[in-house]
Amino acid sequence: MASVADIPNHLIFVSIASYRDPQLVPTIEDCIAKAHDPDGLRFGICWQRDAADPDFPYLQDPRFRVLDVDWRQSHGACWARAQVMNLWQGEDWYMQVDSHCRFAEGWDEKLLRYVVQAGTAKPVLSTYGTAFVPARNPGETEVLHDSPHQIEIKSFTHDGLPQLKPSSFVDPLRPNRPVPARFLAGGFLFTIGDFVEEVAYDPELYFMGEETAMTVRAFTHGYDLFHPPDTIVWHDYMRADAKKHWGDHIDATTVERVWGERDTQSRNKVLRLLRGEAVESYGLGSERSIAEYEAYAGLSFRKQRVQHYTLRGMPPPNPPTPPDWTDSIYPWIAKFTLQPAELPEGSLDDPLLWAASVYDADGVEVYRRDFSAVELKQLHGTEPEIHVVVEFASGTAPVSWAVSPVSKSRGWLQKVSGAFKDGDFALLQEDDIQEDDSVDAGELP
Image (cartoon, rainbow, N blue to C red; front, side):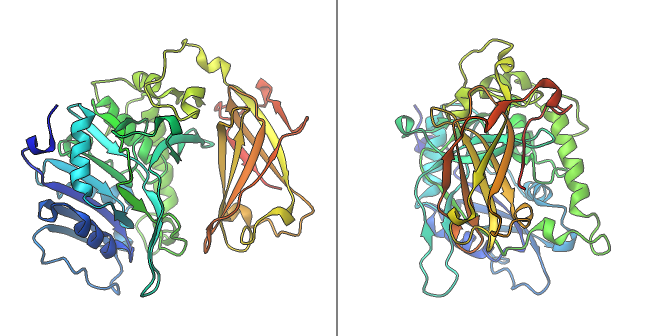
């Protein structure tokens, strides 16, 4: 097998789309400091900023190509990533990261070694970065958590888009080399430079569905998907007070289009793409079909069903299954009850979200629904009980549940869990299922 030394060109184009992010410069500094060959890096930055923001310190560095964009002119993350791709100048390697990340020592050498180990002409290494907490004040130490992630499907949205989640590798499969993956992450991916031309970012996409769209486009263009076996990138997930595009772009008098209009157009396009329908631009490749991807990943986009092997987090490709396998995935409705006194402090004071999970008898998470801070506003903590109702699809019966609250200021809080009792769940009748065949839903009282 070839070695890293056999790779003739080690130039890496680093793509960063940054939206009003004070972590941009610390991310770049860490990326350079931790690289084995910092002179081999070429940065493309879409710097979406306010005029009052500090100057960008690398404008005179020949390794940097920077697009200076007033935040009001931004069309969103995917648009920004597409603009950065236009700055690529033929570098052999392409890495895309978010602007609030930290890096492993020698990350560039590790990634080059992993693409050799992947043993394929068109590998993509991607995952959700492991969580870290940046230093907020001088003298503080940044907290970098351990454990690399793989990407799994969490559920489908009400309109049929896959929702993804990070998950630890199954213990017996803890790898020492790249592991086949089902999905790509927008916040970190590494691949050959030709990806920029073959699977160019669609500037019309907004946010939800971005990663699945890129996954199926890469797969159908002949790219093979992998997770790195250890942590390469850490990601700041909390960012509770960070500026967000959808928080800024709400007033039609100050921006070209409000974010909701862009989101609706984007979601509709992704849905057509996932159903194998023709789209006007940035479509599927011809080397593999969408049906081949669904067989590889063990899911059905049209019927919004997921195989149990996939939910268990086992590596793809999935074992062969009968064509009618979706008929064995049943729609369920379940209810569980929380006592407000059981909730950890911070659950309702400054919630970021509640992750509500349903498990089967083997402890497999067959469903997860994240309730947002907006949804949680209706709760006050003075209710006698809090009832959570969820609808989902699974080939196995629900046995237990858990709620993991996330606080804006404190991060993940202690989990509250319990078992379903008789009468807490039932199979949905066909007449109760929505017309779009989706059974992903959830509500709080």
